[in-house]
Length: 179
Image (cartoon, rainbow, N blue to C red; front, side, top):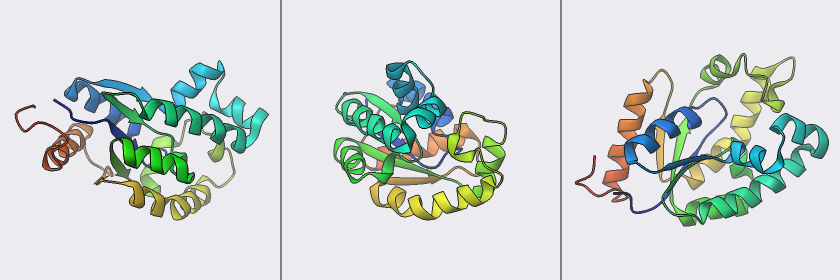
């Protein structure tokens, strides 16, 4: 039995959606992806929002979604990579649940996002430079908001899920008898 929401943060390609779906199944709680929620509300994809409204417009939508989603009960929320940029988002996440930072290297991010055209920030001649810069800017925020830090590089998703469950139990977020 889960005692509070669990929120996944980390850079693109860290495995938030994959790990999130698996973890929510293990915990028997609803999985919500904030980026998908924004797309569903808007009726368009994130690259379109970036094209029409710019990053600022997208971040406004993201803050509204995170505020609303983190107020729900019994969910596992996977956030977008830049969700932690705004102080209010970090406050919503930190105060309304347990935050798990899925940490990964730039090399792993490149491997996992190489063919994904749905990542507007990577539509550039030098995705490595972009990812390195983003990690430098965002890394301290991920660390600041995290209750748990898990490295996903070269780790089997099932092992990552089990490691998160073990950490949640140690923080008394899960009943010791469950799972």
